Image 1 (tube, rainbow, N blue to C red):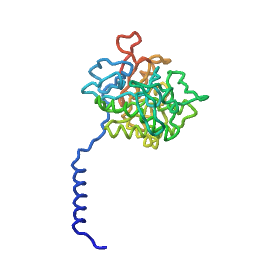
Image 2 (tube, helix red, strand yellow):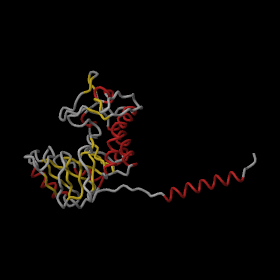
Image 3 (cartoon, one colour):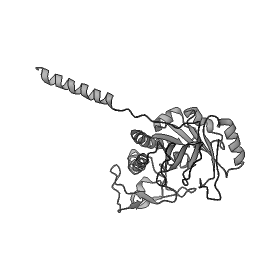
Image 4 (cartoon, one colour):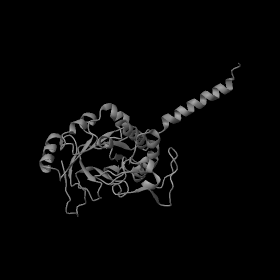
Length: 291
């Protein structure tokens, strides 16, 4: 076979051009929060944070970012939103085509096969009244991702810095689910978040190991009640200072637990003390302290 010198040189030139473009392109890097500042947990409603707050978490639908702070975007990634029987208008191909109207569609009508079921019917988390996402198979995970990814895109469009994907720990609460399935679903979502330059949190699920952190694509942790359950070290061992701790005021000896948490880790990680409803200041149950 004769070698075409002109064609060969042209191919080499194109390769060099592509390499130069790649090198010239700006490299996006994920940013994490400053652990020396306070953390406000505002997923139950937005309000003006005080001057010591550097990191804030807010609901993706209800809230906007606060300029100058590290903004975390809350999504319910492994269960439906509390009290919500609606899925966004989505047509997904990995599993089957959803029937939709112009606004929204009901989980039970249009995504029933993606929900954990008993006797052929979806059932609710008894504590929160939320449907549980079935992450058992790759087809289900891909289909669920088709629903959840637009929420992550909304976070990106609003200018958030990171994603708080709630209820990773469903595999600990429902025997039908597995850690492997949930981590595989988390990895689909974290890869997408990372493509939008958003960091991605491990929310709860104490006891994960370094291999699990990698499998899920997690960058930092958000831990509820880890002092109350004596499990905070399982998070700091994996993430160092990049752990956000939330303790709740309705637990037994709650004030004492918060004080001990501050003594143990307050100099290392941001800790916030909140009422269970994470309410706004005008509500009677409102509690919001930091250390």
